[in-house]
Length: 200
Ligand SMILES: [Zn+2]
Ligand SMILES: [Zn+2]
Image 1 (cartoon, rainbow, N blue to C red):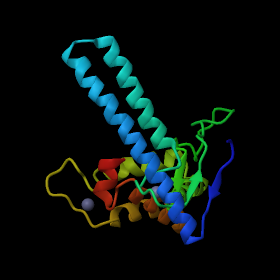
Image 2: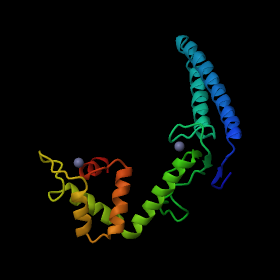
Image 3: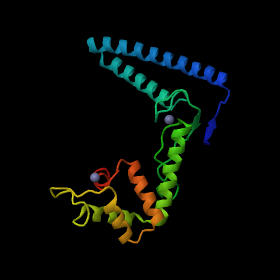
């Protein structure tokens, strides 16, 4: 499968049947996994390193298979959702230009997580039309310097996004791009000026 596609089952009875099959496959996987782990313990006790290595490879292949399968969303862990197939996208395109959609390596994820993924990818692309990478680095430099939150000094002066907004404004970044940029910072775990710095 190369293309992104969703499999949506609306009928509640069919959804139940589908979820039952997913549960079946899940119990099969955990049975196989625990059998392998039992064997691994024996090999550890007997110091049979080669056999242990083989078992460990099998277990990790099983984990990868489950994570990439349609039976669960690796992002939120839910097993009862309609799923979308997202092909793995290389991190740069054929001209070696970074691909904004590339952070994704899972295969089947749920509709909700996929909308979030698409939204974040769009956000990154839109931000880069209003800000260059140099702008972003200048922003981080100014935020961390004396005129920003001054993390190195004792007594932080943090007022949410106040400093970030002021610096972006002074840099002449458009209001629309500012908002998107701060939303993306929030997504990466920066919910105020100092968290942006700590997580950037
Ligand atoms: Zn999900
Ligand atoms: Zn803060």
